[in-house]
Image 1: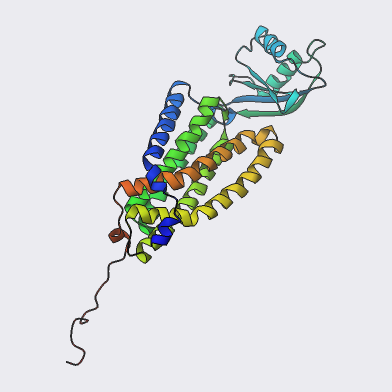
Image 2 (image 1 turned 180 degrees about the horizontal axis):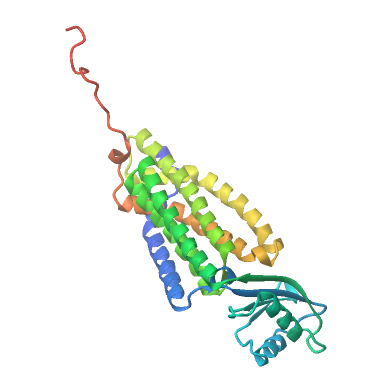
Amino acid sequence: MWLQLKNTVPFMKWGKFSVVFSALMLIASIASISINGLKFGLDFTGGTLLEVGYDKAANLSDIRQELEQNGFADAVVQHFGNSSEVLIRLAPRENVKAEDLSHQILELISNDQLGQAEMRRIEFVGPSVGEELKEQGGLAMLVALICILIYVAFRFEWRFALGSVLALAHDVIITIGLFSVLGIEFDLTVLAAVLAVIGYSLNDTIVVFDRIRENFVKLRQGTPAEIIDISLTQTLSRTTITSFTTVLVLLALFFKGGALIHAFATALLFGIGIGTYSSIFVASVFALKLGISREDLIPAVVEKEGADQDPLM
């Protein structure tokens, strides 16, 4: 036991600092979401999305001015991929077909001054569909957290279950807060990434909790904090290698995957980082603060009927 403690990283000694750090990140995320909100993509808001390509570098200011002068002041214009690719988002318009609207926009932004534009892609989502997707996405995350709470409570112990769900909520709020702070578009691909982060973080947390439970049964000496430190140290190499290899793939997607999955890769990169941190410093710290002990994890010995009687009698 002494030798194990000698080679152990004292994670729980940093518990107070991690609580303060997590609290600051949560406050900043919630404040940004409350004040700035989220920049919802077309999937949630509804409207028309046009992707056009020019034969030269596009001047976004001139395109915005042209659209504004012709009754499209609400149009969001931005580069997409490179300087000659332009993405235009428009709010829903009643009694106007998406096809007619796309032709009208293409005529406005394709001239001698701006350059010749070519339609690459057009998407249309109705406002009712967008609102439904937003509600269903939020419900999906809530149901996922509730199911995880029930699963971990049955497999381990309610303190571990509560700690894991708090850690997952911590990961989701901070990841969404990043998109609010940076003003990155939040669409269905990002929602899928957030749900993937929940699964990844939970898997990491389950591995840690499984080792903690084993060590509570195996090690007869040591405080709960010391046993948790030993367990986290034993699983640290596995956690580091898994996170590193996953991040390598995501970096390739981030830099080479194109603009369509840029936000998806961003959410996963940040989410995996914060999920790895929470598996070590949030879930375990919360379980310790809730008073987890050896007695909570060692199964009670059930005496068989008649076991206390003398077999010779």
